[in-house]
Length: 319
Image (tube, rainbow, N blue to C red; front, side, top):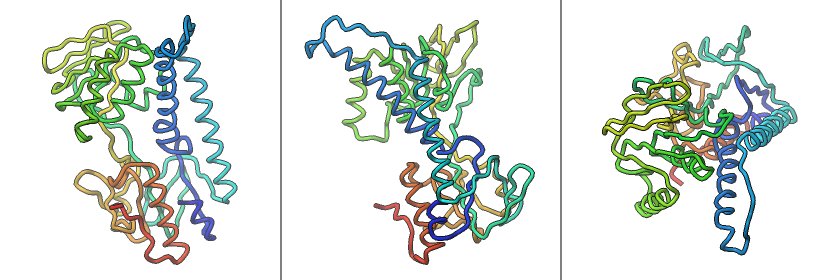
């Protein structure tokens, strides 16, 4: 959005408190695809004998792929930084919060602008149960220094299913705990049925229609209790992937008068405009289609409208 605005001659700045690229680049699509590819290679080696490869020797090393994956993401961070610089977009390091309708504070400095775009995305939502503090979220998955031996993954959505599948393929003993009747319950029946079959073939244990009721730390491992009475012992990784929520708490939206929906998302109209003139929002924080390309497209359309005179430019979410 900022680069498109700068392309049209606007003076633009991006505020970032962590690493450039957002969720997708740092703790989402990009590193997940690296791990998916890693797991896929393991499965290919398992099947290699059927293609004439015999006595194949291999050993998987988690620290190696973590370092290589992290280095790859770091290179992408650098590319984003250089692209912003090449587009003459300023980068402000720190956490932004509103102090007024068109004023934001970053560190000890206050900045004003005619147009302010909120594109902070979301953050993992954590379940509540005794011992929940022992669990990591999907962000924490990418911080694991060593491969878990026995993992319990909480959640039935695609993030939980993907991470559970990666761990199982790489040799971790995985138990997937799903509150609903089946994983990916909102997907087509044939997808859910095929997934269930493949999970069983892979050796993954799946507990549906139940929840984690308690987690207890016992030395270096945990005991995880489920609401159906199941007890899972010697667990060294409890991973919660139970959805995401908009990252609005640090923004002090009340000081700008920006309204939220009943579910806590920033309310916007068809043109990404909030209830406050000159303040806009795109991406996961609006609760629309939560996909990176959608957020990018919406942000570009917004810049087209604001800075290139395309008065009717907007993203059609119905396509």
